[in-house]
Every structure is written in structure tokens, then in C-alpha cells.
Image 1 (cartoon, helix red, strand yellow):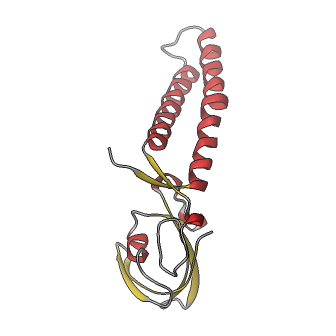
Image 2 (tube, rainbow, N blue to C red):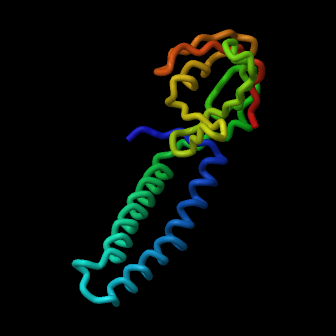
Image 3 (cartoon, rainbow, N blue to C red):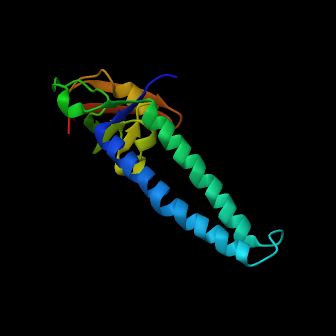
Length: 158
């Protein structure tokens, strides 16, 4: 299996979330299942079935996170010298030529992406279009929603 890139901050966040799932949510679900069992007939016990379904979802998420951490290549962007070039983990300040506004993205791994917070996955068209480019470059990126045109204003390793 290939290595999956992950920022240092992402690794810390995923480990914390994994710990919460294993040591807080998993025991709560086990208690809910035991309580629902105590109510009797399991065939028509909606609480039992809902708790079992939630248990399955939590176990799947735990497995996904453990697998991701086991195959992660953790990259601390702060240890990479800043050259003005966009790399994995960079925080990039862009000027959107069409909307005439500034936007900031941090390029991260899939499990830590959160577009609402400006954390975009390395596998998105925007990130792929940015990686390898330099400050002051003007670029056009084809996305499913159309072509985007940006000028790279700043590249920071924070």
C-alpha cells in the first residue's frame, strides 16, 4: 500500500479524534447497547438497532483512522525551507482574478481536509494545480465547476 501524506498537525488531530472514538464514544455505545438489550425483545427494539448501527459506523471510522496512521507519511512543512514554491503543507494566499478577491488555502492530506476552513486535499484539482508553482505565478485550473484563474501572492510554511 502506498504512503498517504499527512501534515504534522493532521497527525495530532487524527490521533486525538481516534482516542476520543476508542475511549469515549465506543464505551458509550456499548452502554447504550447493554441498556437497549435490557429492554427485552431485540427484534422490535429500535434503540438497540440504532445503537448497533452507530457501533458499526464508529468501528469503521476507527479502522479507517488506524489504517491511515499506519500508512501515513507525516510531513512537517515547517522543516522544509521556504522558497516561494507551493508544496504539500503550504499555506497559499491567492488572488482570484475573476472575483477580484483574496483566498487562502492550506494543502493537506485527504483525512484532514476541510474546505470550509480552507484546508484542501492534495488530491483536489486546485491543489494539484498549485503544487510546484511559485509566488507571482498566474495560473488557470480546470475544475468540475469551471476554470479558475489565480495569482499566487504568498506561500508560507506555517
